[in-house]
Amino acid sequence: MLEILQERKLQVFEKGVDEYAIECGKASAAGSVSQRACVFCGSRVVLYPVADAIHLVHGPIGCAAYTWDIRGSMSSGVELHRLSFSTDIQENEVIYGGEKKLYASLMELIEEYKPAAAFVYCTCIIGLIGDDVDAVCARVEREVGIPVIAVHSEGFKGTKKDGYRAACEALFKLLDKDNESPISPYAINIMGEFNLAGETWLIKDYYQKMGVEIATCFTGDGRVSEIGRAHRAKLNVVQCAGSMTYLAKMMQEKYGIPFIRVSYFGIEDMSKALYDVAEFFNNETIMSRTQNLVRSEVSKLLPELEEYKKDLAGRKAAIYVGGSFKAFSLVKALRHLGMETVVVGSQTGSPEDYDYLKEITNEGTIICDDSNPLELSRFILEKGADILIGGVKERPIAYKMGIGFCDHNHERKIALAGFSGMLNFAKEVHATVTSPVWKFSPARIKAKTEKNPNT
Image (cartoon, rainbow, N blue to C red; front, side, top):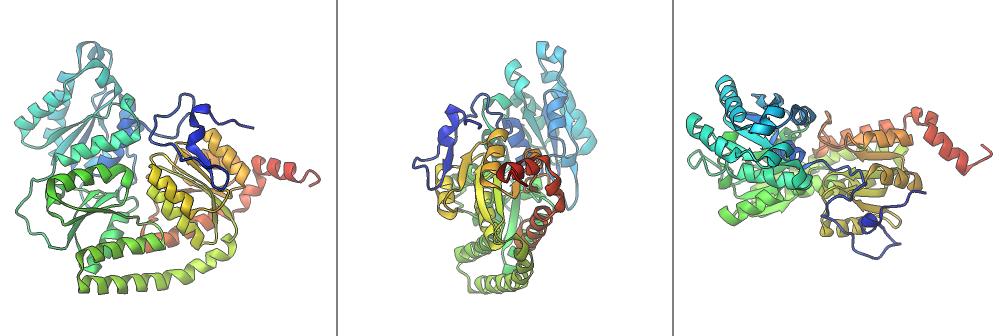
């Protein structure tokens, strides 16, 4: 039986068995093979959807290759974000410095593509050799007249969460550029929504039907000019708390914009996200439109979900995702399908997040922070999960265990947010859980034999 690393024992909690508070926010334990990504990756996934900016990775070519087209973020127009540029640092620059190469790369790219801004991502090697990236960016900005922003995302500085913070600091520098274009008194910013499979467009459509204007979205289908007027919105609506709460707090402090945390996944949380905005504006027309919208969408959705529930009722699910707010919604969404969550964890959860997960899960559920493949495999086998919901790094774990898998991370191509997304989620879960292929899995056959030796 696998033993959990001593340093991690307080990061794994079984409801009804353990009594302690879950530890979180720690650096990954040595030898744990954490599912987390590095600081650079964290900053890249947040800034990547800004579609009219140049994204230049200052470092070895491997860093740019690793994060190329990393999100399934769609754009309604220009697609500069889908091009991956690198200064391709090699031995000569490691010895003599890469500032000249960075300057030349920026000037060439800006001349060729005419971007609205440029982000320069600092990688591990740049932190080691000491390039003054801020100075190079400032020089290029003076010469070309567009924002050129250094993103201090050296991978060794911390975890993916530190990369989120670096991205927020970069975005903050783009604010307060537009104080003239018309903006509604009922304007909000959507934060932490990255337009995976067009989800930003779904959410914007809901708010617009309510009579609420979207000043900008951080950063799905993002544009530099829209970000420049975001400081004039009346409310920040934070979908991915792990990536965007820091920016929301900065905007609250400087511009006085309050923020709320929401989730756009599942029936309950999607409805609440709309109602919370309507209640904030305290406008009868907006509230009436919201009620009609939610009533219409839910009345169409529930009968369709019942068909999938017939096959899924009583099945068990394991969840491991980046942000804990998404985990909340998934637990509730699975409950609508008659499924029980037996394992749930995240990479970036807070103590308050894990306390809430304790409240909404059943006795015996394993709750984990910053897990690793061996732990997840053990939990899946112990609890008899039928499906693992996670990201691309969790997919091989599910298949090796012989269970279904649902990709709920940023590589997916199917919209899972909103009311229509809930239906897509039900279809995907049903298709993978009920697939006959799993009965041929060596792991499933072994588990069945050990449980019933005479079969």
